[in-house]
Length: 624
DNA sequence: ATAGGGTTAG
View 1 (cartoon, chains in turn green, yellow):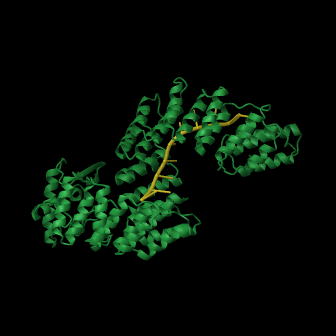
View 2: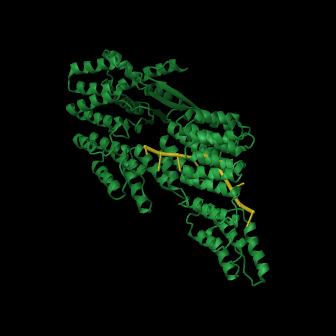
View 3: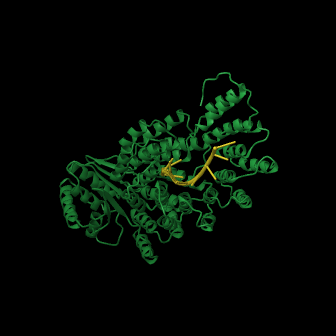
């Protein structure tokens, strides 16, 4: 961009400067543009509209944000060509106030003696409207495009589909898409695909994907991320497999989505596979890719690996810090989570609401009451972040479990948003733990009223009565539960082995190695009994005899997964289990004993946190 | 001379 300046005749100089622009298709820095501008001023060529328009073009290509400089350049052009105006519109569309593009467009129309809009104009304007989610304005741009005969050009059509998608008007995207089936290219298809994904219509997206004449890596990424965003993780991974089978290379966006799916499912082997693919393809470790990897390792139980990656990240943004802090919190490493929070603020970054969910979650899992109170106050007072349901959830859990049940109840009373059932259930759990019968009774009945088909509320209330030895009430609540025909939350545990996912439910006999698994359960039983274990059946509340209760516990899904893990992993290997519900007290005890008796490290991710069982102890210190 | 689509945290 920058060449040595030698005094020359005006015409030659002009040519020389002109050549600076045409050889650069890649974005140049604002600094380089300013240098070129300086040279133009020195050469006395500021009246050259073409040159000035090229400067604007470079600015429009660079990723910068403020538009003051580009606007002053634009204003210095007395008769702006459509090329100059288009580039100014583009500068605005990339700035923090994309709506300025529209103002420029209307002034362009007023001064239409200089230039008429063209196809480029409408694509840039629609980009601005997408950025601003300005539905009404964009619809007017659509009308203008029709009026100027630009609406049928494929670039404009694609921009229209994307624009309506950005405004969540999936129907309008579809209408533009259907409008002219002949004028479609791969971007048209991909835009429609993305519109269905954005609208949550993943099955329609899949239809588009299956129908499209060609697919590129963006088509694959879009449909995979569509599954992942809509919580259809298995299908997302299945699609990723299909993509690889077709010989398609993954890129950053694909990797990030697939890593997120691996993380959410807790599939370490799969996450490692993606990591190795990323490395063998030598994809650059960008902030988002690095962050996705850190999150994946944390959610798959390898917090050490997460920390290592985090410490070696060339660049971090708030997402990176958030996944690290939340990861540490989920592993019960409260002190480190809080240290990271302090480091993040020392680095001059501004914590987000999610950051505080991590921080408060760390406090609640470790029972750090005064720290929790401090950070909750800091969040509202210093950072002006309004607490959301999840923040209250952490606080109620923290206070409630630590025994400050009344303070937790008071916090709920003072909330500005109406508390949701999950929050009440958290407080109910605390009531049960600390024997607050009266409050528990009140909340339990409230919850049953709010959510009569959820069996957990009845179970909790019944166990509060059981703790108070109010047996008649226990029977009454259980009968009520049966009468209301409640749904039992389906508990499952999964374990990965040799690239396959094995999912178990309680009492499962579906697995092909079921026979061996139940034999292993017997072995486990014998060996832990030798170590002095006796079952604790308090978590089983069905109307069955003691012996049956013992059996019900013995066949909890994580026991089956653990038995299977002992069968298929090598001596001394770590066993990793993911379950959707919280681990029950008895299974927690058994896991500790197994870790000692069998000399295995067992890592369980339950519905709320990680438990690392090693040599008879758990990382949660039995506080969960 | 200027144009388009996909990415992560509770």
